[in-house]
Image (cartoon, rainbow, N blue to C red; front, side, top):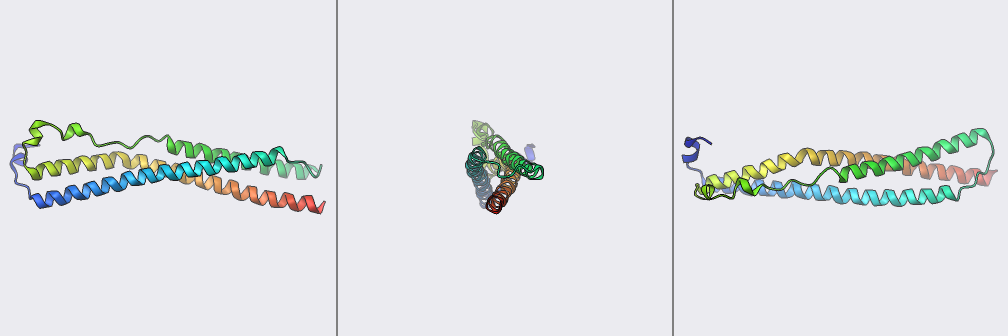
Length: 176
């Protein structure tokens, strides 16, 4: 920071408004980060339960027809559902592992020289620190949300295929 900027008078009210806005945006981003984590945990739990139910269904499955076309169809569906649910779990786990939310670096603002500066300047510098943290976390949050969305799409397709396949199997079982 140049000497001219250091000696510049700051409007305290403007700096207060900037700092308050920076705090609000930081809190909102932290909330979005936590909300993403919570949604991912719920998605992971649901997918785990669904996968457990599907594996139970597979273990109790008895082949109603010995027809080659039927066996090919049923194996392809079963493998596809298993792959979709497994991939969904992988993407949910990737979303969780994307890293922790970066915190405000207090070293930037806690020092005796900084304490002697103009109140407006101090508020502005603190606001800049909040902005820096938001910017650092933006790409992490976007990647977490992207992985979550992919996992959600995969589990949705896996669930729909499971339900559709189950219904077809039940019709075949009663028709034969």
